[in-house]
Amino acid sequence: MSTEPAEPAEPAESTDKNRATAAALLPLVGGPDNVVSVAHCMTRLRIGLRDRSLVDDSALRAVPGVLGVVEDGDTYQVVLGPGTVARVTPEFEALVEKGRPATPQAAPQPVTAGGLAERGAALKEARKARNATPFKLFLRRIANVFVPLIPALIGCGVIAGLNGLLTNLGWAPAVVPALAAIASGFMSLIAVFVGFNTAKEFGGTPVLGGAVAAVIVFPGVAKIDAFGEHLSPGQGGVLGALAAALLAVRVERWCRRRVPETLDVLVTPTLTVLVTGLVTLYGLMFLAGEAAAAIGAFANWLLAAGGAFAGLVLGGLFLPLVMLGLHQALIPIHTTLIEQSGHTVLLPILAMAGAGQVGAALAVYCRLPRNGSVRATVRSALPAGFLGVGEPLIYGVSLPLGRPFVTACVGGAAGGAFLGLCNQLGVAFGSKAIGPSGWALFPLLDGTSGMGVTVAVYAGGLAVGYLAGFAATWFFGFTKRMLADLDTDAGAGAPPAPAGPASAKEPVPA
Image 1 (cartoon, rainbow, N blue to C red):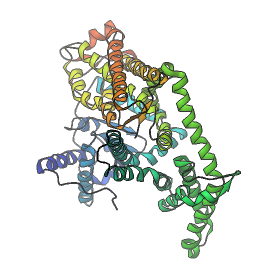
Image 2 (cartoon, rainbow, N blue to C red):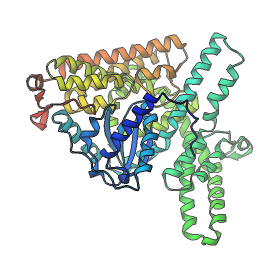
Image 3 (cartoon, helix red, strand yellow):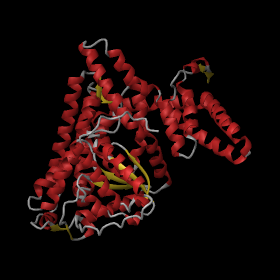
Image 4 (cartoon, rainbow, N blue to C red):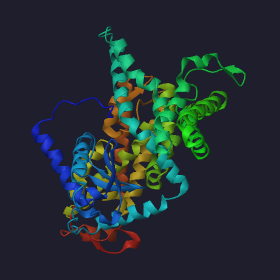
């Protein structure tokens, strides 16, 4: 049953456009019978497939409105951008349900795309192979627990920011308590949602995961002593909820194997909640609380003591972390920081990686004035890049070219160093939610120096990232051989390094 509020009716033209996009996508992923599951996050339509070989990658990239495609573990992801993906997904689901009894349609012949497209596709496949380790697969599953929560985090974060603005200005005092309740209600129960999603992701009964996680936020835990001190409601937060739900899944599986079927409906849920609840109260809440406090203290110390150097490292290494799949480990850390202090100080600095990427893409555009293919790709991907959606620029421009990916990291490092230095000088701020970056992060900023200063410093970091990424790419992003090969009217040429010559005849917003 959907928990999303009903949306106002869309104009017929918009609805038709979303339905047309969904109709164009379905045959290119192998038809309805090849679709196992459908979901979406902030920017991507996530499709579970029976047979990956039926997907026509090249044709998918050519569909109007598609910003790129990404394969991540068991899901095939079509990047559609914020807003659009939430409207296309239900249309896609409806077409899948309607077409399942029919024979799957054959995918059309691939659209030929060489050069950067081929290099980008090869890099994606290589990344998929590297990321298929048990540790990275576990991180991906942890990310799957938190990704469905991002829309609520964003919505509540924006409302909290609006409430803070009204409070500071002294406007609408009668409305402020209502906005505070709306903004804080979800965060007060986020542990329950984490427990529910964890059990669902790891093969347990979702409501049992939510039930054991609810113990953490129950006010009555204040009467319980553990490790010589009273517990406090919410102690351990999302980390405790994650651990409790994982334990509940193990206990439930143990019971399913041993409890007779006639008693299963009574004994299994009782033992699962009882055993896991006791372990949570007398162990996990305390341990998770200590871990959460350590994470918060370390993040604040890192930026207060490390300053520019810490920001440089964080901003410069984030794009490689994304390529290795290790960025998913940061999601519960961000959520823990938001739960503790109302914002995550790490996200604005990590968002500088996207600024460096945008600057590098602009330099590529200027350095290749005769390569219509690459310039068209940059033009189509830049709007999403400014809003923090980086896949089109990464896979369509910088990564296939090689050197511009490195110089994009340089831009991210410069922007991160700027924000880290400002933090060390006393202008500390963070984001009330995870998910957005780039310009989309402005409504979610939260700092101790006032909104005007916070916005100005973050904008300054973006500007530094843009300029540094542009300058590094302009001067060091191309060799003479690369320029000679790539800057041609036909767009023919080869990406640098071991790939050798290849053509780039069509724009590929991947």
